[in-house]
Image 1 (cartoon, rainbow, N blue to C red):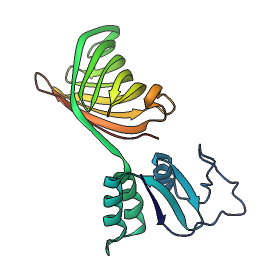
Image 2 (cartoon, rainbow, N blue to C red; image 1 turned 180 degrees about the horizontal axis):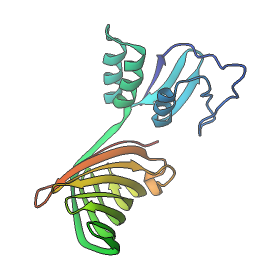
Image 3 (cartoon, rainbow, N blue to C red; image 1 turned 90 degrees about the vertical axis):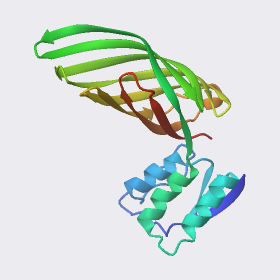
Image 4 (cartoon, rainbow, N blue to C red; image 1 turned 30 degrees about the vertical axis):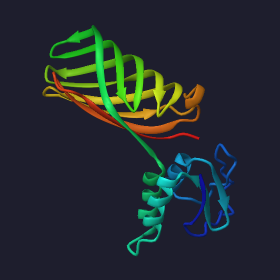
Length: 216
């Protein structure tokens, strides 16, 4: 691991605004919302007078060096790029097995159902997940759904559990989902995990997922 100092401008804490602290008791007050989001996604971090100090691996160090030294760098672009550079990416395929969906309200063409599914992740994330979705069908060709995945397995060689909140739509035979790892849900070697992901699924086709995540 390398220690890196990144200057992203001097931030003043307004007199009328109380100090805000993150989980590591670092001062965050006076920053813009997108900067708060970035800092919350960082790994080991310290606050400095004119920037932040990060602990990053060699690959992240090289990416950060290219971004930070670019003549086209802007403040907004730097904030976004730092987050992308230090996040890990997991890729693989996903299976939805034992699909059990039952209606609890029907008023044609509308329908409301609850689905219980056994999800299997393969690839960088090797895991099983118990899943329950609430699904709302305005008509036969459109569905809005949301639910939680209780993930138990191994990610990048680290074993543990965490929860994913999923929200998505199914329209004309294609399901598109967005994931967010539930804050504070990681256990075991995956304690402290955070991140987001997504996938798109067509019937009878291999479904590929991507998750951008950080771990302490």
